[in-house]
Length: 157
Image (cartoon, rainbow, N blue to C red):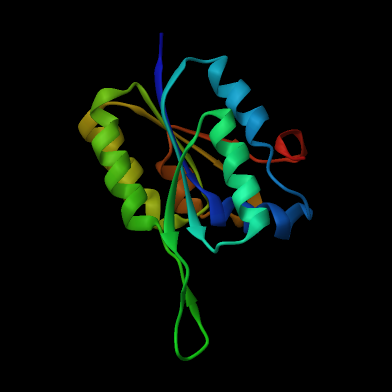
């Protein structure tokens, strides 16, 4: 059976589905779709800790589906801007997991991950699939993937 590792850039998926469709992503549908293709051995969802009740309910729902939630503190800078970026953490986890699985699935539209996908495809000989909102996914990320899956209304709530 195909061993699958799933990595979700939660903030990216939240904002891109909201911007493109005004709706939320359906993680249960994604889980079922992936389970139909193999055994999910790693499933990480990367989010920002905001100590907000709605966020905590969402994270609890992800845990019930089967995701491991990785949280990073929300940082409000003195100039009013905010920071909460998981790119390096996601990259490290993908690099660690890739030698142990047959397929890496990344949910993000962030072009910063294109080199990561090229690397794991070449060095670990794994399939690297991307789920992203078509109009908000970097072409470089789409081109770096073994397969690109368009997030459309079928995967939304």
